[in-house]
Amino acid sequence: MGLREAKRYIDKLRKKQDNPYLWPDFLTGLPDRAAVLNKIEKVFPRIGRYGIAYIRIGNIHPYLLKYGSERHADVIQWAAGILKTLSDESRGSFVGTVGTHDFVLIAKKDELKGMVKKANKLFSNKMRGFYSKEDINRGYVISFKRDDGERVEIGFMGFVSALLTSPPSVERLNLIPALEGVCRSMEQTGEEFKEVSI
Image (cartoon, rainbow, N blue to C red; front, top):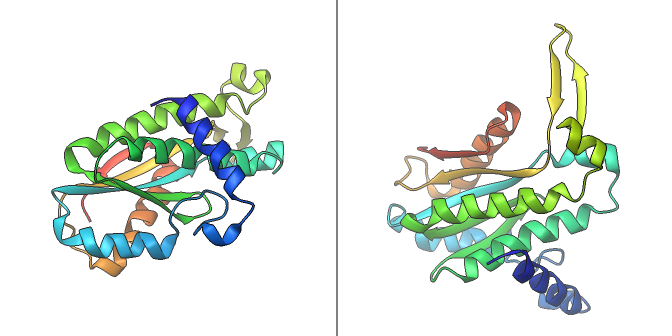
């Protein structure tokens, strides 16, 4: 799997978008939040054999602040295309969207970590082309000073992923909000990948 396959997925998606009733999520072509929750209901008793990754596009808001929203849909579609083509390569896996910048990937426990790391590498590499050479050379998009004088530099887009591979202590209905909360905390601290117990 590579960017070529993801590009083919996006091209097919754009052709099919002429009829939005064919797609649960018009922008990505992926199953929507309701479908994700339905899939989680089925796989929940088998978490441990299967794993769940909550994947969020990190640092997209600084990108949008600096560069505008002209390529916003492209960013989301590349994320979806990369995750979908990786999911298609792994029998029994599933990917859907649970928010504009948020996805859930379900796969066999022993495959999930490798899939997420590969997806992050592909996505990060693709997103570098969305930035100016100046930003790439500098190594960040936006910088500012906090009230305490600390300088903060915000980097490039990439996936922020929380992986659950052991049975959770939270109830099924609270699983997605709990994983989302972990991802948002990770984004604040700059973490990209974390195996969690919740």
